[in-house]
Image 1 (cartoon, rainbow, N blue to C red):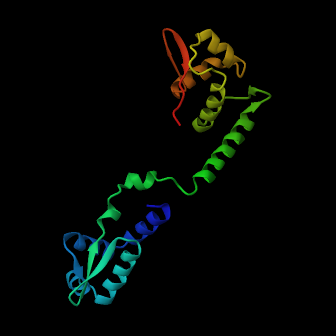
Image 2 (spheres, helix red, strand yellow):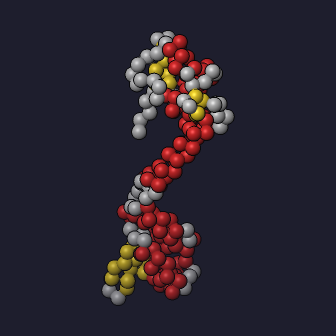
Image 3 (cartoon, one colour):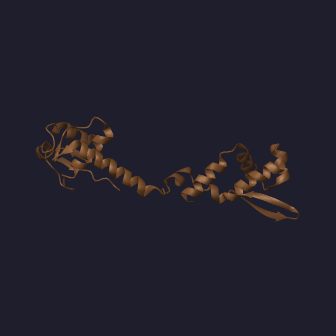
Length: 186
């Protein structure tokens, strides 16, 4: 289901009468007059709502004798909410561009001539700075604490805070053998 189809479905479901129609059709297939009687609505109102539900693929109709019967389209409701939310957004590229523009703005504000002017107080900005500093460490290599301190001291005098925060943000890990970068899975 595309993002646009999901949006139309959600908009259509945001009506109590339509939800009651769907609940009735989940029990059994019905015709307009029976739904109208069951839900205490007029037949034209039921027809209006059924048209909306049919437009988004939530119900289908078929002929039986002289009745037009309506049935629930189960397949529309099979994907979970998480499946629908995890579907790639049509704006994903635009969002990525905005993220990168924000990242560059933060880097320009806090790094000047290869030095960190100050450690950002705001966590999301500090994370961007720490990710940039992480590029100074080779993947797969284990560093001594002294080596980490020397690398970070090139950026800022408070290398202890930077080192601690890189570990706290799970960008680096440590044990008795030393420090290494944790490469995030994309």
